[in-house]
Image 1 (spheres, rainbow, N blue to C red):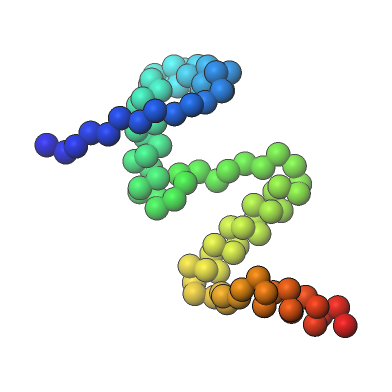
Image 2: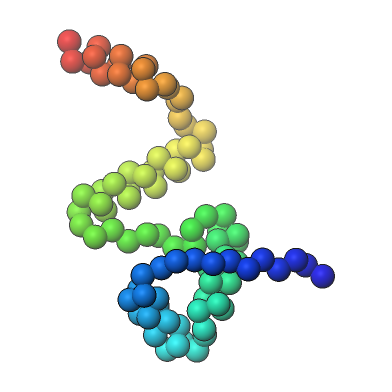
Length: 94
């Protein structure tokens, strides 16, 4: 028998009520929704959805972050210390 884990999460009551109403509308309860979230996270090896941004700045940030993750997965990245980055910034300003 597989072990079962019980989790406890604190969340704003209003958010919980809104989410619960959505789940009720599609015929599932909150524990089932949480289980589905975990299963889909494992299947997609990450978040099972693309987080939505609220404004243009956040959208641009999300797109840049996703591009960075893609480049990292493709092995296209360079590791630098913060000191090296600061030195590069100083060199570029001259």
